Image: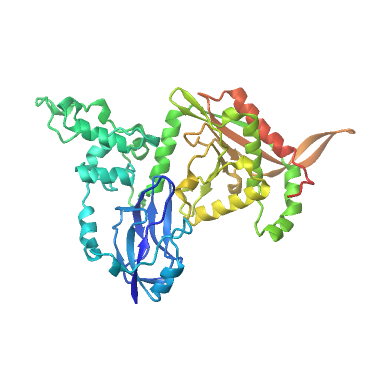
Length: 457
């Protein structure tokens, strides 16, 4: 039996480290090839790290809630045929492959890693705060001796009000200045007669987004169950509160007759699955219609930066996906306008499957410019979705229902059974007026209603 190293995989182009959330296996457990060993988290996504080889877990080198570096050793496995595995396995061959087989004996000082890990876990900037801090921010805080209370008091300038590296460095620079500029809540107030009235400097106020975890005091009954929010739910809560505070939400609705689309899918779905090995749903059609409408109305494909409007070149469509845990994640189809219907179907199915398996990469949930959320599978006919910042619009797809409808024919008006659905779009009224929002939404409906039943893909 030989010992091999499990490495933290590359988590995205701009991600250098990740936080170990939970060890799924413990020392002494047997691990099969491709079986998940540990759950890690970045600012964008939670992922499970699988093992490229079968073997017994000997040692976990990174404690839960501690930071691991990309391509750094996170665990030691004991396996058979290690030399052969090392010769055939290349951990850089795929973003999802996570380890290279390297004998531990080649790395001097490996036996001292346990002491190093345990000494690094004493950082006060842990995960006991309601706010989420990136691994880099927590590392700087630990090195500089910044307490958790101090971190919570720093106003974040990053996305969703998060504390960035620059925020921490600015805090460190100002920490040694006069009492007026001091961020530390532990500093003795200057006015000793009335310390309870001492107010912190404006810069020390926590961002409003943290109110997502603050609620009025409530009475808990003897039969009530208390469920602590997990990390992802806290991030979603912060993101939603921030979106509501930042954007002026307005929602418009249209009803679309998608009878032709339903008939077309019923006709081609069996042959398509046999040919492509993929099931075709309505989602890729919705994505295609949105991408076409964005080309017609490019001012929907924008972001707001202060008083600046950023017009996006790429059309990257996010699709909200429900996870088995009940949480929500939004994988992004990059350059959706450049994919045909077959390509969109494969992209939609692949992202949805990997989202449910916690195998998305951070780069796959970023840089979206417009979001679609499909509420139809839950029997909902319409909704008022929350804008996914920093975007300015989000489309909700309602369920398709058979309804009686009045049709105009050459012989006069008739009542017929048609497949109808509602499209609901929330948009930021600061930059998207009702005319633009309404025309864009109607254009999406027009593309769906005009679907060619003879279309071949």
